Image (cartoon, rainbow, N blue to C red; front, top):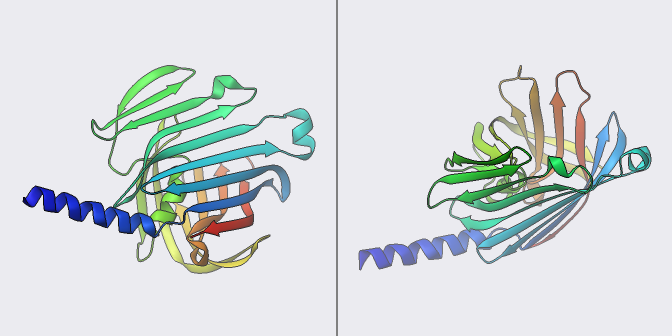
Length: 233
């Protein structure tokens, strides 16, 4: 009897949690280097009950479209639980450079993660809270970083697992083509790592990422900045 009651309460709790997540988010971004737009990114997040689906399409523009007309499509799908998004399947596909394609399958019951890429198939242990490259950003929509000083999680890109560690900075404003927004800034730790990212989450827009800056030592920073946003509650 207690087991049935616990399951019922858990089901209600999960349903209430999922109800707070928007049914649909459409976000468009410019991908820039030194202020020059190289590509357009369109992302669509859809919630159907306690399940979700995300699709991200990146298309080059300008000179890059002439010399490298490569379309990249990434998808993530899974469940929505008490702690947010639980990815089940992630794919990353390129129209031309198919040897760079990758995929990840998450088996939460067995705590197993399977990676598939040009190097073959690999089975890895699946840690609690692991996200894929796409679901990680929308996990902030499901579980905003209010009151937190830092965030740690594992992130799979279909080929490897990266240890993500962010410092959550106090509220600040960030200006994009979409407008000036209140945001939380997440900064990679430690600060001296060769590969890092800064993420700004729009507080008044369901904590959707409104600006992301990727930096690797020895290369130019890549900036993804919001240009348009539509949210269906």
